[in-house]
Length: 255
Image (tube, rainbow, N blue to C red; front, side, top):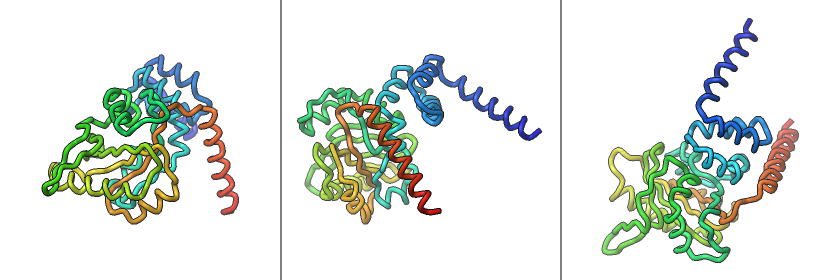
């Protein structure tokens, strides 16, 4: 009897979930995914983010599932302690192919491209983000400083700094970010808001260098990469397969 009840319960749950997205989105998920896990991932993501068919297709084509699965997010201990839920909000790799930037570009080009294509950036960055300003000015002492991009996240209820770097991550970048976070929390953050979070978005990063740099960082900070072109799905799926094989190998050694 319990087995029949469980089957009934699961069918009822699946039925309730399936009715929450459009038929077009169902067809996209069925035609573009390879596994049960991937289908479930996009099904729940589509419900959560209320994607249109075009938005959902873009996320599938950009390998969002694979990027999340193989993600090696680098966050400071402060981020996990102060805002543990922030880890789920940010990605390890952001795909900004919609900017149509050349391989060689300046930080101004990158910043300008994001602001010009803000709707597409929000889709990639996260739909709970609200844009506040570009080159956001803060004043400390007698000096003016400018934050590349400033957002507010509705779920985290906090200000989010995005600092853009067109080269490899360097530990020095954290000092500037920490200064901005302190200034925001002292002078801009409202009493009912949570401590601000900062993300350094670099063209590339050495994970070991990032881990060392963040290990004693006292501010909620994260480091991510951005790509100006779509990563081929074949490469992402190969990396995901390698990730699973490594996990199985580690599990076997533990036994």
